[in-house]
Image (cartoon, rainbow, N blue to C red; front, side):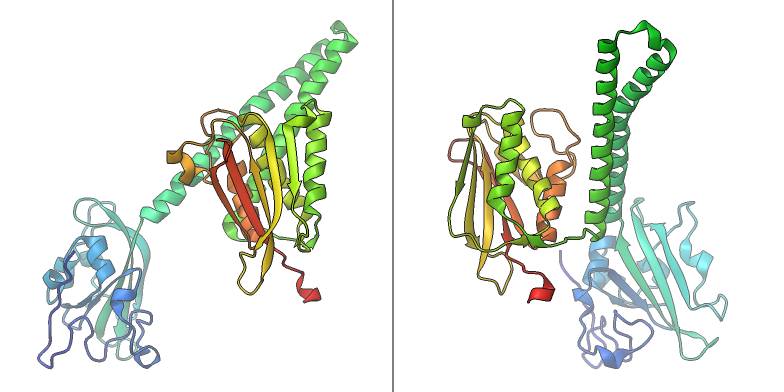
Length: 384
């Protein structure tokens, strides 16, 4: 895309007229950021002078409006930026920035339409030389709504998935409890036990789903708390392997290898258990052959620290298709086999990153999937 410019008689770029406020401070604090380049801003910036002519049109405004700066500069604001509200009314005629109320200083952010029906978020500031005085500049900020739309779609998908996942266990719980209450004496003790065990399992499923939703909420809002304690990673992995063996998995399906010496690790033991549980369960359920867990010292992912602890979980199954690698840690990814909510690996990534670590996925030497996460040693602040 070409970026057009226009010059004033003094040789100045028309995107930077003298006396105009910098884009980060439309009210007029020009001295605080004299070297700010409007083209560096992520949002669109359009400035009109006291005559309503466009004197600044930055690169983001070009991208959002699909209009070249050269075609917009010097044009009346309503022509360079022809906005309509969602009812099809011309916005500049409705707001009348130059002839409207003299006490008005801004327009709050709202959804408006560009030609062709594309939605943008628009806010405007009216700069006056004195209160109730004539408008010297109109500063307009434009934001693309695509990111917001993606967020809204993601939230809608999450709600739909949760509704679907909750419906099945709650229907089961309701059905069995209603049947037991209505016909308690018609069932044998074994039948009652079976139905109550099913209700108990479905209640656990609902509890897990609610816990996942809380984790996602905390991860998305940056409020996931990490309570660091000393963690013996080898012992933690060993407990998970013992649980699978007790549940009927053959002991020789698991291979645990620990490279000593390992650095002291401070992490949240409950959340590390959650990460290990998810990764090992994925390898057991979706992989084949031996599930290998390697625990090794590694370079710390955190700047200023020399060492960290790395855990690699791999299997000998079919692995993850190359085209799916970049979606593994997104919401609702389930791979080729259905089952689960598809939220587990998204939460795993959030937990690892909350610890200051990194997690990757690739292909194991045996052909299966390989997940590797590395955590910094990260001693608590009161010990540093």
